Image 1 (cartoon, helix red, strand yellow):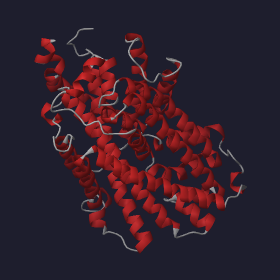
Image 2: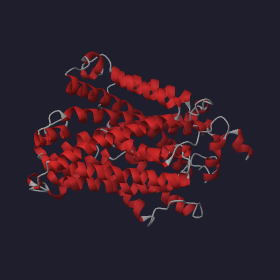
Image 3: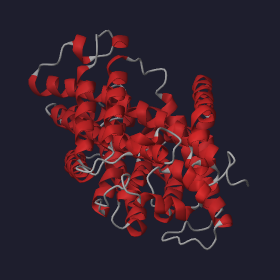
Image 4: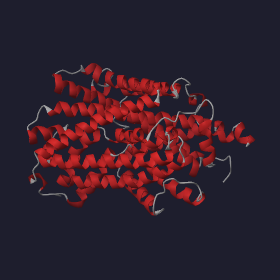
Length: 471
């Protein structure tokens, strides 16, 4: 493999040493508690508050098994993320891992993919935040924001002011510092876990077994079909790996945070689903846009609980916006530092210890996207982008085990290559089920990215810069 060709890889040692350069050095201020809260913050969003209704419609009470199956599907990729994050503690997540294993052009492709995935995610989630804010205001106070300033043009409004406000507020927080940002996220994670705990306690206090019969009305097909939808309620643990460069003890903390956040969310999800089925039928939940609130209203006679759950959804979504946006800034930062995007954006603000300039540029861009752009047609690109990243991370573990067998690995995936191959199979299976239009848009975005790489990234890459030639 040619050192300076498009498929040249970055040595793991050079990737790690690059994190200590003056001007682009991030502060190591993130603890295992903050990293775990990042994972929980990114995973528990609107998924559990909404997807349980659609899942129960498809699988019936057996949706409980669908949630477990989806968690297992994620677990295989989570193991691979844990190994690479602990071994290569560098910002960039799947982009950096691909650079170390599969070559620069593959790294660029996955980085370009993640830019779209995270950017569209933040904009789409911010739109959902505005809708849930209105739902909370209506449930708690009987008042909501006017349609003109609370929805985007595609939904009949002029612009989505709440989406802009939440994105700019998160931008300000991320500029001020990673420690401050993750402390706020930790508080929000505690609040949304308390809201789910409230639901679980009330549901089990009013629990009955009658709704569990028949358990699987649509058989195994219903369970697996529901799992394919529910899978996306678990996505977010990968964002933990974007904080690896700022972790105080990445070798120990990253595997604990990645696998721990997935385990915590799985326990809460399963208890929530069991409790929901115990007080409401699948039909009652699937007919409502707020299935958990509907379950408490119809199963426990607590119509006021809608306000509590709406507040939980607002806090949950705010936390997701924070963590996903943080992840995007760190991936973009890594690509800029490597020269594949303008290196001046990788400058770290000396006062705050964050890539402030880059964060502001991204924040303004995403707020405009959330305010005006129709997102319905491109939101499924988030799903295919995430699954594509899962495939490459699993491949990266297999490749590095062969090319760098002696590399220090604080955490090792057991039974390689079997478990990573299972992770690949799960991701490919779910990708194959996505609509053709999504695949066409995905290929189109990748083609645009490849053109930018050939015109700019290839020539400005650090692999072809003066420091590389001196080495």
